[in-house]
Image (cartoon, rainbow, N blue to C red; front, side, top):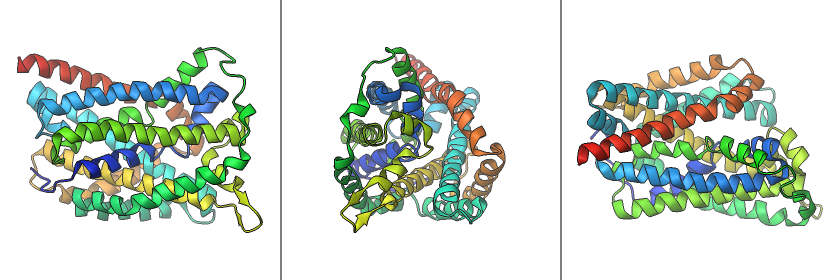
Amino acid sequence: MLEKGKISSGEFLILVIIFTIGGAILTLPSVLVSLAKQDGWIAYIIATLIGLCFVFLYTRLASLYPSMTYIEVNEKIFGKLIGKISALLFLLYIYYLSSALLSEIGNFFSTQVLGETPMEMIMILFILTSLFGARLGLEVICRTALIFFPWLVLLLFILFVFLIPDIKIENMQPIFEEGMKPIMNGAYHSLALPYVQLVFFLMLTPYVKEKAEMKKSFYLGTLLGGGVLLLVIIYSIVVLGAANTARLNYPSYKLGMKISIGDFFERVEVIVAFIWVFTEYFKLTICFYGLALGLAQLLGLKNYKILLFPLAFLILSLTIFSHPDLIHYQNFMATAWTPLSLTICFILPLFLLMVGKIRKK
């Protein structure tokens, strides 16, 4: 195995939570509410239930060959040629996902925090930081996440508690105003952010020590991460209103600006920024790590670390040249990202499981 490290089921749980939240906490409320309006929270509950079905698929696939990553399982079940093609499609998806995460980091900082700083410099700093994290290996990534996780919980608690005075329940009414069609449309587009992306953890399951506990951690992490996102969506609707939430690019960042306790504790949007940067960084780092590890397995290399610098350059290049502006990126996410994600992360793993079951019999 290229990766010698092992992680506990508890560390796996924290990674799943962070991965679920990362990349979605800032942008998902706007996307979902623009489709389902004040019923966006209902759409997300439906998406979460479907997401648990995806996790069931992924755990069943992981149990077929517990000691193999998703790349190795493809070759084992489909054979070398078809298996390598299928694995390559998955790696290309992770490659673009890493690029999209880096793009979101650059867009957020260049528009909201560091307006005078070139976006390219922000992205270079982040990809270099992720490179060092991926180079240190899976154990170091997990233990670092374990150190920062209590701060994430504390900041989420502060955000949700201090926003209670600004809640207006009437913003959630009327329920089912336009029927089920917009709700199901919103649920469909929510599947790609983040639930089908959880297939990535098939790259990490071989390194979890407690295999039986790993399945419980997978389900629990998905539920807890989804619960946090559900609360963010509900707060965005009841505090900002459906119309404002749909119009803003980063509604949850705006939530931080709404906090005001007396004359001394207000405009603490830095809380939301820290939560997002923390989860986004770790999601980018483990995607970067998984991409390098998977590509090394596909090419038959003995060390994945020699691929990190070339991959960092390729991710940065794709980020800069794939989308000319933020509007083009958002249009791609709204139209093409969900069907692409479902094809690579649901249909292919489902087919892989079916063929694997037949071959085992």
